[in-house]
Length: 277
Image 1 (cartoon, rainbow, N blue to C red):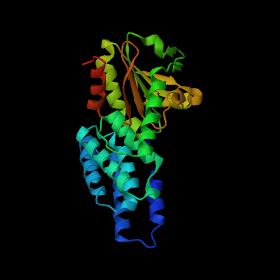
Image 2: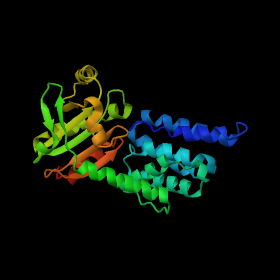
Image 3: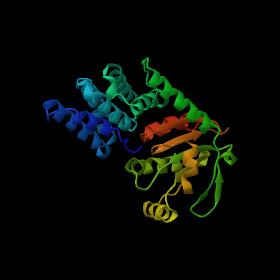
Image 4: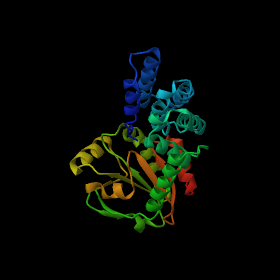
């Protein structure tokens, strides 16, 4: 998923300080470490995220929520349950112990996503966390009933509910999105491995057709790419960051979803829930 503008929370906290203290320098350095995570190999990324989660717990409360929130946005790519739990624990602790002015609605949503979509156990008695969980539940109800008809790059129409009997992976992406680019080889591998077992991949972009066509040709993408002019499907699925993927089983039920880019093992875990091994 594209980086959430939670870094603004850090900068707001920075502005409250009269001088560039050692604590401030450490927080800035940690934020820069997070920005470099996108270029790290998957195993290195997971180790670094876990280490950052532990270090954030030692930071002043005026920095903790913003740092932990940004880390939560990167944690989805870790793919490691233990790492995700550490991140969720760090963010929950930051929200529980930090002064009110440093807590943001976006931070509560990030924590709710770790709990709902990554299985992290979160114990936080806070109305804003409860509201964030309710919002995700509302979004999921809409996605369970969602349908769309979109054209692929050759002009053929694809309708989600017409694909009953197939396992359908709906992936929202864009050519300019770095995590989307990193997951391309994994999605291609899934297509090659499971197409014969009934997997249909629908990769949806709301960019201009010419931009998408050029990118698909350059990267030799073989699975189905759909165009979403006016981002109607994206709005229908309430997608507010990319990449996001949703998996429907052969009965058309939404059985798994991931917000951010999972590892290949993360994708395989999703597909196993639909009976693909």
